[in-house]
Amino acid sequence: MGIQIEFSPELALRDISEFKKGKRKREECIPEKMQKGKVYNFLKNGQRVYWLNDEKFWSGGEMPLVKTDGTGKVSRPVASIKMLEVTHSIVKGKIFTKGKYKVKDIFDLNNPKINFESCKRI
Image 1 (tube, rainbow, N blue to C red):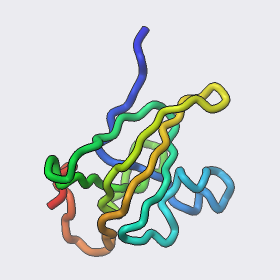
Image 2: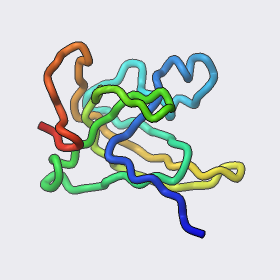
Image 3: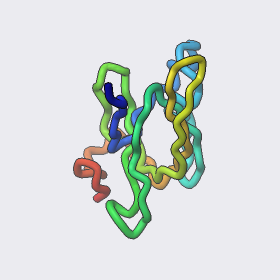
């Protein structure tokens, strides 16, 4: 028997409409009015590992924030973030990953400019 974890090169959150419908907690969704420089909390089901890194290494410490519908499909990056804190916990018998991230830049999904190549900020 092993430990089931997921290595996540990006932070994939749901659309804020899921929170408004009462299906998800606010921390599970992309903020409605995301602001550059602001720190936000996140919550993910399961035990996930995110890259915490110094800004002088790997992509300047930035990683993509993407939107997911829960089926494994994700959007183009909606923002560039820096992961600040990650914690695993058990709530009512289920494992969760929670933490904090800081928004470094916000992208226009209608603009064809490429902001990440794989997980590297360009």
